[in-house]
Image (cartoon, helix red, strand yellow):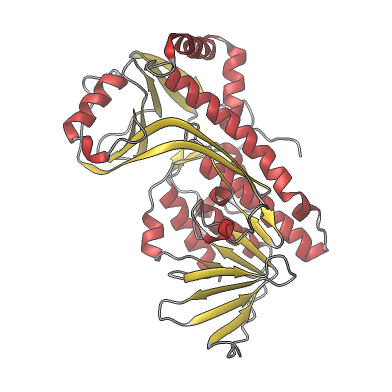
Length: 410
């Protein structure tokens, strides 16, 4: 496997150290670390830059289901056993409507490995360990990262190390994997990207607690609003409560949280536990088109945000990473530019498919509950959609396919 070429010398412009590599990956979340691992397995040298510390990145709490299609992707690269922690997900979701239980499976009948209940921090820790064990170059606490000459043949990525040293990396490609507020998308000139944004007008209070997890991921509808209960470990749960998007976390005392959860989940015997984290976020969707500018390719949240309903955000990032790694491999090994030229188009097909499903599920579960804003007509429509899901085998199969992550024909 090729090693990074480091020709360290003083720049005539400033006292910066210069080096070169094939790909610079900006961001060490699931998207960036997946790109880096796949490139490493393809024999392509790369450098990963992350502005946060390793300890911070390893502890970031996010969604916890790696869907079946993503598990198959890691398996095809020979990485599934190394990077997928957690436990196999049995594919059963519980919907609770006014306290009445309905079990729905996302098993679409296809063969192969099943989805995994794998919190993001576990995936990130394992991806980090695998990349470093394979000799990967991962640099934490990279400050003041900036991208230059993206439209040329050899972009330059500049940053400052923790000890203040200025470095400049010349590369063939940049993978922008640093999220919605990162520097990668901000480096694209105005007018190049079209942003498609949608605000759902819904807030969620998310609560992490040392409390028993549910037997199955639980989504609940009630006149008081939406609620959810998800496992985050053998003794840890993540809860969600619908709230006004401009609400404040400190308005939710522990007793208010547990009272609301018991009422909306229809479980008066719900076991409470110490709350270790709580925050409020606004449900929104965002797609940037195209996902490429010159030699910069946007991956995951740097290109698109999806409502958390359906657990598609992290899985879309993994899909982007796989497509980009394969496209770069084809270009480096065979000078085949097809994958790079079609990267944005192929990714966005999946993005819009998952956006539509997430939007459908978001509107259904929120409209079916508290009808203060949507009214009784939309509430009745949403309840009809849920009834069809619970009673129609055809509707259940369609839901299962979308939850699993269909293999869209390329």
